[in-house]
Structures are given as structure tokens and as C-alpha cells.
Length: 301
Image (cartoon, rainbow, N blue to C red; front, side):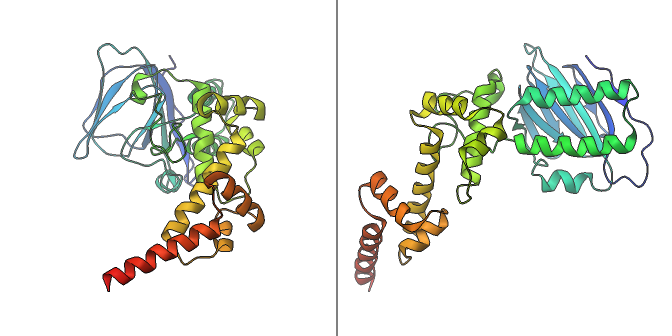
């Protein structure tokens, strides 16, 4: 365990600074007056319950992050059978709230972190650097900002799983996140799928996705084969085509070119791939949709 470590009085010119960092065995935390800065809690291997006065109660499990705002009364009670470690990072400064908000981390519930052990290691390395006196306050500010960005990039959207294109929670992980051990390979796959859902309109190569999740293309393809029986490229292409089909459902008067542009595909290639996937050309699909819309309008009139 890493003892509570304060960083000292921050320079008033710093918009973001590290206030404290450390780890502890899970134990009851009772702070009726809150804490002076933002607290980032990281749960490693255990499980407990956060109660935020006036807001609610949340269960936080292994591999998850929970942020408590300054001066907010809160309490943490570990589950009796849970044996884990709780890490904490205190962040202050005039820009702390806006940075956490803009990166999507400031939310009222725990979130799961892909590659949790990497983030945990970064936090403990920061503690050791402070303990050796090897890091000045200004350098620490840059390090904590980078750590926030890394955590934000590793945050797994709550509506993205690995059960299929557009699915919610993974079918093969039907238990709560807090009740399962961290699986780096599965976390990497979830992160890869999240990136595809976010950037399906962009010129995103599988190599770039593999780099972002820390795996080779070959390893990432093996994970996709294991869970979907397709390559990563095939998964991404199916996702794009499904997105285009959904878009045409909502825009029956649109052209094939417009549909192709929504997913960043060249028109002729889009037509070929669409027919291979759905058994008809997108133009035929648009014509069919228009016919249905006309019939519906006639019935309504």
C-alpha cells in the first residue's frame, strides 16, 4: 500500500495540480464535510458502495473509476467479503472541473476502465516519483493532465459491449462489471469496438485501432475471431454498412451517394459491399422505402 502523499502548496499560476495520491486497503471512508479537491477513486480487485449525500448510492467494483467533487459529503463502505485496494488521486486547480467535465469523466456513476492495470501503474509511478522528490510541481501538473487524458481515452462507454454490432452489454459477460476479474484482452476488444462505433465515419484503419488498444493487428484479429467469427476489418465494415442502412431508413428520400458519404465510403465500393451484405443494392432499398412511404401517405390521406 502507498501511504497518503500530499504534494505541498501549489503555485497559484497552475490551472491544474496534483493535491494528493496514494492507495489503501479497502476500508470505510466517512467524510461529512467532503474533500477540498476532486477525488479520483480507482478500485482494484475489491467492491464497495459509495454514498453521495443528496445524490444517491452506487456500487463500485474492480477495474472501475469514480469521481467525487470537492466539498461534497460522501461515504464509502467496502463489502464485507471484498478484498481489494482503493487508489485515490486528488486534483485541484481552477481548471480541474472543466478538464474532467470536457473529457467526459465527471459523471454521477462509476465507469469501467480498459487497460486498468496500466492506469494503476501510472498512478503508483507518480507516487514513487513524488516520494523520491524527483518531480516538481509544474512537471506534476503536466503529468496529471496527461493521466486524465489517458483515463478518458480508456473509459468504456456504458452502451458499448462485445455481443455484436450495436449491442449493449456483452452476451458472454452477463454479470456486473464489479463481479468479474479484469481481463486485459477483453478490455482491449471492448475498447476497439468502442473506437469503431465512435469513428465509423472516419478513415480509421485497423492498424490505428490496434495501436490505440496496445495490441498488434494479428492479435486483435484473433480476439475478433474468438468473439465474432470475423476479422476486425470485417466487423468494422459490417458496422459501417449497418449504420448506412439505418441512416437510409431515417432518410428515405436520400441518394445512394449521400448514404455512402455518411460512412466515408466511395460510392461504387459502397454499392458492392452493401449488396454483398444485404442481398440488394442500396438504390433498390431506397426505391423500396420510397414506395412504402408513398403507400403510407396515401393511406393516411
